[in-house]
Image (tube, rainbow, N blue to C red; front, side, top):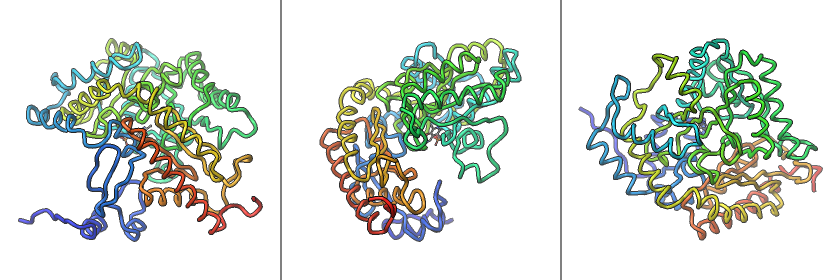
Length: 468
Ligand code: PMP
């Protein structure tokens, strides 16, 4: 019998990792050459690596650690649940208390008229569930031709075949035979990159009307749904102009096309409302969620289903031939119930809306005075810095796109702050529990990062030859 390999030093962990671990969204060869960072511990808004560095977790893990790290109450709730009932499924005429209670708890905070929940293990499975559920809904109510999905360029909807196909990430489509058929594309409401001379408001309407164009080109009788993130997260924290979502809703309603809000990032408080659709002023038919619902303590996601679709499925759908072994896992339900309790007891959604959100936003927006920053945007606790050599023209750097973003991201990690790079922007989504001194530290570090990046950009001649 061989025992499993254990290690207790950075070098040993790196060795095992390089020898055996294939990382998601990574170039393994390059990563192994550089040497991976080993995160060993987390507390509150901070993570710690195996070398003892303390790093402010400006991305809440992967947009999930909303209530902060090291919450004993959630850990205890999971442990108590697993001792009582480690696992049972919800497929064959059974449920368990956690699944029943969590579906009701989610319905209680969901927008009005959304009373039902289907559970998955994460966001990608939730998105795939939407594809099958929505098509099955239309077939069940006598419109089997309504199968096409409209989704946007540069959207992120997960990594499964369905999710990555609905997503609009060209590098993902280039691998593995994507996208699956039955998806048409609409423009993204990305004013900074694509708005040209239009005002943000006019550009928002223009981008929304591209959804109408896409639906009409496919024929509304063939279109099942439009899916979008209220704020595109992985695409670069793209906050649509206020005109965008109400117009998209109008377009979908007029054409009897269902509206799906992918709230894997925006859901459960990130925008200062329980759901991003509430912040953006629209009412979806379905909501996908994951991440923040358990604050990352246990994998769980799902779909919140509005009354129209739920009643259609319940009355006419018969068996829904779909589900996951871990749909409504007891541990995940316990984690979510404990997370929601913390969010409610500590009034964290209101804290994002009225307290730490505005506090950080004001200081974040002030970073726009830095020579490298073209736009500093933030809603609730989700934001981005657009880096540019020339603010007025929103110009790109010379050299390969993304070089400056990666440079800034690496400097940031080294300076003790996790920010993520998307092309040549930096994005941020810190925990809702961030304190004011921590927010001050975050901003001071970000400024140091920008200064160091600027120096490096000049040194490497990336500024753009014709720009001063
Ligand atoms: N949808 C959106 C909007 C996301 O941001 C993500 C993950 N970042 C997903 C879906 C996929 O979720 P998961 O990684 O849990 O499968």
